[in-house]
Image 1 (cartoon, helix red, strand yellow):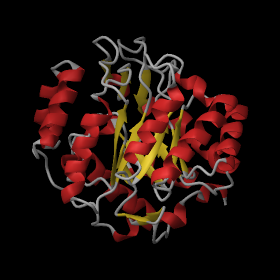
Image 2: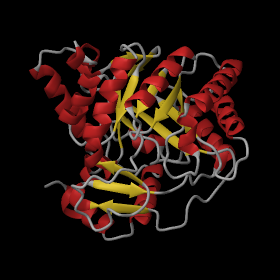
Image 3: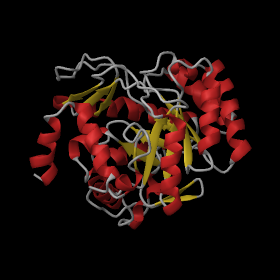
Image 4: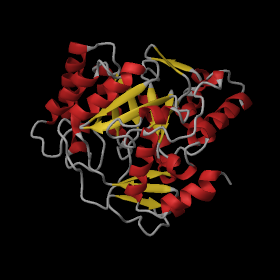
Length: 353
């Protein structure tokens, strides 16, 4: 049992979940974190969108919502970090409590509702970090304000502001905690949105990759329609998936009935199946980022075999601690070696070949 398991985790889990989250972000923003090299396994390096990722393990959006802890998160050995979701104007999000641990299920339920300090403060943080750090990869996840009357404008504004600063942008249309947001996944609305955000991106920085983040709760025909539409509009990648509103019957924790998006181990199988279907619907032509229930290098490997070029974690950082990314990298390198792969890119989508 490591230091986190024996000492830090019991202390953090004794506090309300959101207070622990806030303490973790604050500690990372102050540099109070262990340091792991992101590039210690050469076979984990992967090139995507003209960028060199030192490894394919990323920090998912939702942890560092206001771009406060980029340096601290990178020091944990992540190959890339995604900050946000950021909304144009500051908003408090949903009433507390809104974050719940499900320890028996190694899962989390959140209903944050895009709590954000807004574009202006987020941009200040990102510009300050960029002034001294150009090499490390950061994505920006953009969303809409809850009370917005023009969602398209919210997303387009976010894209225009952050395209010159980000290594990639994510249009988040899949959070279950903002009323009406997932409706943007319907094809008619998605076409309008993608046309607008691509135009906004192209006007300021056509080199910045533009991705869409989708829900795990899509039917096969809906997923196929989204895959076709994303390709039609020349979108550069898809993140699969966000949290789920489904509640599997296997859940044991007392807080399993809380409203919100479920993440963690119960999401692994459905999100990986959707990822595999998406890879086939896109014929492997669009880079995919696999998210949902990744706790081990074997989990990350399964996502890669299903079609992911990169993966992201969040819940496993809470349960495995600050060494999670480093441990997953070590385990993933071993999985690749056991199957005779010399690089991540060789294994992407291999289960379909």
